[in-house]
Figure 1 (cartoon, one colour):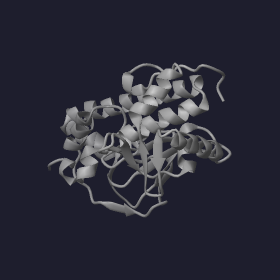
Figure 2: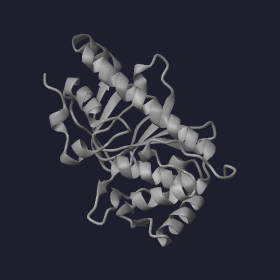
Figure 3: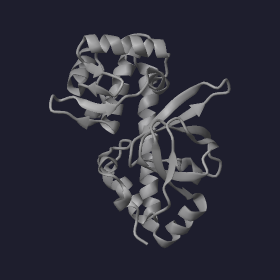
Amino acid sequence: MPGVSGELTKDAKQARSGNYPLSHRADALHYLTRKPLVDYVKGGVIYSGPSTALYLTVAGRVKVAKVSADGTESAARIVPPGGLFGEACLAERPAAERAVALDNLQIMAWKRAEIEQQVEKEPALGLALMEVVIARCLELGERVQTIATCLTPQRVMIALLRLAEQLGEEQSDGAWRMASLTHHTLAEYVGTSREIVSSQMSALRRRGLIQYSRQHIDVYCEAIEQALRSQGVISRNTGAVAAATGPVR
């Protein structure tokens, strides 16, 4: 049976999920068999706890978050159309997490047993999935280092760069436009409070580094990168590690 690549919308095919080349994800989709589409409304919970399946977003975005003992969520990833999530199901003891639809959503899902059977038939699927998982670990490592070494305003700017790269499309004025995210979701992604994110977003808009409305966020990536370089912080697009100029806040 042919893979699922042909099921993706144009936006999904163009989406850049994570930091790995599109070809790696496309390889995995080539070997995964088509499954029925499942719909979720905005705000719907796909799973809460250990993941029991590997999921593909065909349309819409998903927030994957870690939940602390007191119920606080930390957004590990925002998954764009065409992105895979729930890969922890392939582990012997998958960690608990929560996946929530940020938009009206269409997904496909494969149980672990189905993936194992398909890997036996197509060993290349195992390699493609391994590349996806490794790239995910590298991205999380970069984010942990950013949290440990950067001031909060710098972390907000770096987060906007990452999200624009993964979720956005380039506009004629040079901005990268992505569908709007709430300040609460951005705060969960950055690892700070909604009030601080709102304050930083307003400051960045006054400086002309971003524009935003209820519908979208425009991120002027080159201008943000220049601002970070002027502070001694190199953006992730250059491949260098961020460095802070003061205590972490």
